[in-house]
Length: 356
Image (spheres, one colour):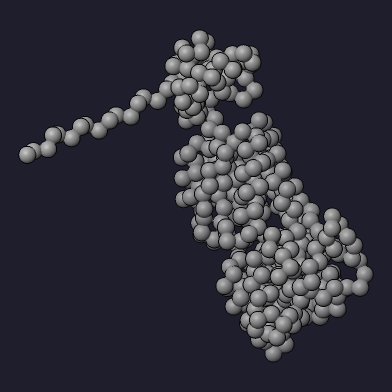
């Protein structure tokens, strides 16, 4: 006996439109649009009728269609590398929350550390983002020009650009590194070393220059040096090389906390405890954990994010004004991974800090 023919697949019901909501609520279609536009002029009674009709019909505004009219997507592209570094994961979370408060959403693009990011940034522009934040990602002069031509503001976080058309918000790389040099000297260290990140990264260059310049002013020769490439495994290998030398360093300044965690692990596991003072840079979340306790120079996350959002809003509202280029100061937080001087220690917001 043959089976009856299968019923044709049921077509999904048509999605409700703004016209449907307007007809049900007894208002104009423009009133529906205003009711779903933050800050638009619409009476409380009209808004209530529109929201009731929309709920009954299952209507949601089409933000893509609205963006074609307003020429604003309410999306900020964020390109970031080193998401295995907990500092950037925390930065991304804080930035998403801060931008949401301004009515914007984040569209995330990830980049490989050290790779040419222009192809990724080209893709970002295809999404018609309102602005672009580059966290631990460089900006070429060519792409900076393309962003200006497209009217897309750019803010770099933890990177500097020679192009003055991009805003830059950074921690105090040179000042913090100089403070670390004075801290190590005051603690009686005589053979300091520097564990660099990427050779072409402005953060690593500025931190190394600030450290070496201050050591020279204190009468030290050039510090020992190795390169960890901002990578955990390569930082471990570089630490082994330094600590295996005939005259190993007695202090190691790591260009970021991610490498500092690697250096701490190698020193504790493989070299009989902690034969070297280790200092990082960032104050990434795990640095404060009791199991790690990394002494580090902080990059205060909330003030940095606040300045990034301010820079973005300023460029979007007043594109002809000069972009913000600011340095956010931090503090040297003492957590036990480095021998400390007898003087200069104080309390700040529950943290032990060294001011020199």
